[in-house]
Image 1: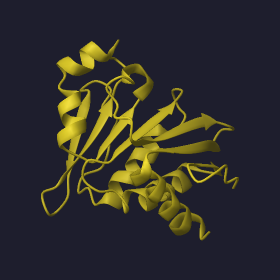
Image 2 (image 1 turned 30 degrees about the horizontal axis):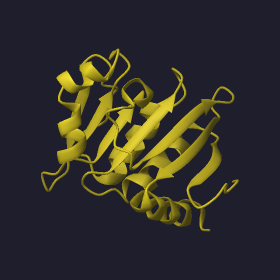
Image 3 (image 1 turned 135 degrees about the vertical axis):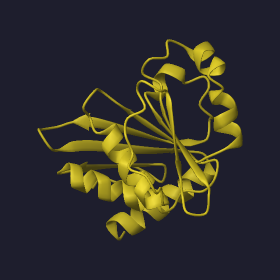
Length: 165
């Protein structure tokens, strides 16, 4: 597990189950208005990680990819909402604006965004950016980058709870 600096962390997941478990650890730390960007090629594990994050956050329903509906909303027992956005079909930030994503990112949360690079101008400067890469059939590389003080603290805490260090 290379620790690149206080703002980034890089590690391997050896299975979809491990990717989900890491997501659970991250999800347990999320607060309202947190923005988690999930970047990576098709099949890199973005939705798998999102499933774990939502489970750790306390979502009652199973997570599915929102590719064809743009946004899925998941609720906890206390009524709080988590938003899972898939920007794959959006061509630019103007389409994201039309879909009211800026308001969702600013006023609600937490928000998970798959394919954030397509709408990067709408993404807040402060967020966690997670890039997933395909290594082998079940292995994935994950690189987490914290943008802003809140997310640097979140990354430090995640490092401790996920890896004990």
